[in-house]
Length: 554
Image 1 (spheres, rainbow, N blue to C red):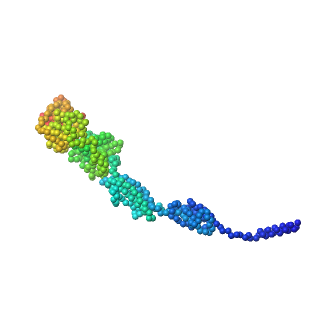
Image 2: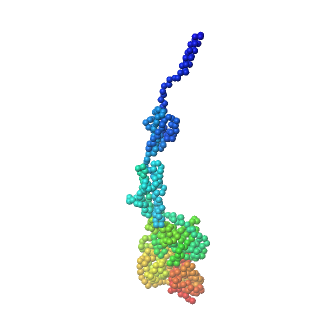
Image 3: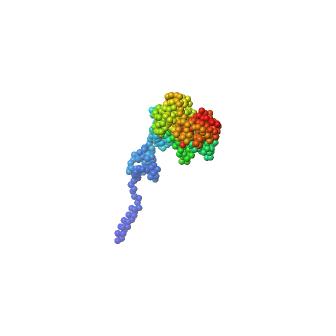
């Protein structure tokens, strides 16, 4: 027993002794396994290797295959390789490779051609940017520039905004030896046929309670229409009736002469003013012209908005601009007229589909013309007849007991004398003040057939006057009832009564009044007169040509 213990104790002590001795350690090389860094940034990689006994060296490689700042690859190693701690590793990080600059904002442009008074304001550089591969802007200058060519390929210093056509603008940007070019087309076209200037312009002057006649601005009412640039008005405040010639424009003729688009211009004016809520006249400069007509800008109110009819006629190509220079609306009329002219519409070159372009027109008997007048309105006709009366420059002509008035305007007509039988071509039937008349008389279109023809003058009663429109009649023993003076010129109307108490109006126009003044007529005195009969609206009047057509009996 004792022996066993001792042995055991020896063994135990030996074991303990053996346990207390230093073990022999084999040297071990420490390694690090390279992990996959794909998709990681330089900052993330730096953080990942923090605390690891490795020296990380970053290399920056220009490439556009990997996003800027991200891992590309290990240099000389691969993912999964084991490397000794304390070693150095090189890691490639992507930086942008130079690429050609980008140019943005370049778009094709359509511009309306510029006209006098409306210079171009388009900037070829506005809104355009050039950016290098680092995102830096390249300013216009040596490395960002453009060239201009016209449609023939000729290089220009600038776009000719006053000339129709296409212009090629080539924008070029350079950076790091790389170049980008972008092309835009600038098309200079005719402005649209619209009323944009009239739409924008408004009457700013006050007119409430004012009189055009007395104050130079005021509300009026239409009394009668004449043509595209002349209208007759009544001043709402003063009650004065007067004729207005529109400022700043010249419309084609539709009265004594007859031009393409003339009647349409007159119709346009009638439609606009007939449908107006208000009409306001605005004076500027000289108040009247050489013919005693007032001059005015004609505004009308539609849907509560003021519109300048003079300007609208220009924009609708029913009138040309004329004498607007120096006026308050000079610029807008200059621009609107030039733009409208470019469209080639209406008075600027279009054929008037309703205008008779023939020289002579249709031969027609005067009686047939009167009976079917609407068929011939605005068409040219040829008539033959005897001149029976002359009022100013205008004449009355009869054929087989039917007569009609030929309005000659301000043109002297010494070749037309009472008793002459004439054939006149190219006359245009028209209606004024509800009266049928012929206009567009031209000397070269008249042929004298005979002279010294007898004129038949029929004596009638006042209640028969409507049956003799266009013919010369005689009234005996009329008693003067009143003399009504015109407020705007020397014209006047005498109201007289026959023996049957029927009234007749005797009209003395401004021309005749110059040598037949109204003071010659005295209420209560008797007269005998003869002259041609005209219709005036729904009534009739005898036109008094001169002193030789009247006998004062008292």
